[in-house]
Length: 271
Image 1: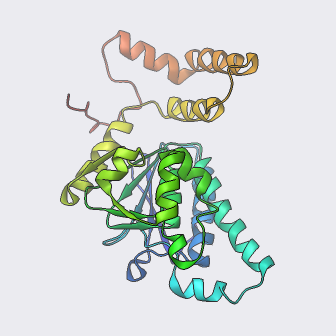
Image 2: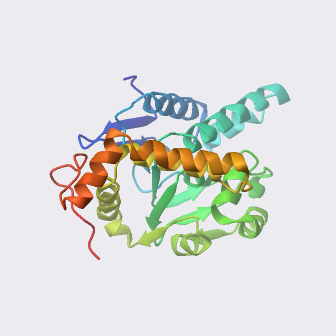
């Protein structure tokens, strides 16, 4: 696997990976190289048929402070076409994360500004620290959250996005949970343990069924109840029921045993 300088991909032997933003000295701020490396890392992960799910995290105190100041200074000197290419690259990153075939979970601590909210919104799920600070900060510096806006609106709703994109107010992890951007929040010193608990819970689930369910939900989205959609949904369940993994899951349930995809240290979540 390719080596990177601004991100890390760590594979857990249980079958999942963590994609780390790794510019800790820059608070994991985005620059052109990081965006390129994130796209490349996601491309590699997309080819891994054994991957069960992906965590997206930031090294150090902050998830990501948004755009790197030096990169923004360089962008200010570029012409329209070059800025359009930069925007296209950022868009490629967001769409690559959003369409990854396996479930994705963002784990958010410290600051998450600007484009960082795009990464969080492109993940299927996100958890964070209660005291995390999030901000759609673009208008404060004369810009707009353009590329990330479709994903942010989907994640936390049109009305809330209008407020926070137009005011550039900071809001806490607790508020982000109220808005639906984060699924759950925890005290900062418990976040690592809770991320492990979420991973442990995902490991209880059929790898094939996770991929099939993500495909299904992306197809359904907010679409109309058309005959084609009905057929897609019916075909999905029929196909997975007769698959080897579907049969294993059904037999394990009926025989009151663990299915084959459980790791030895997998534990049922506490009620």
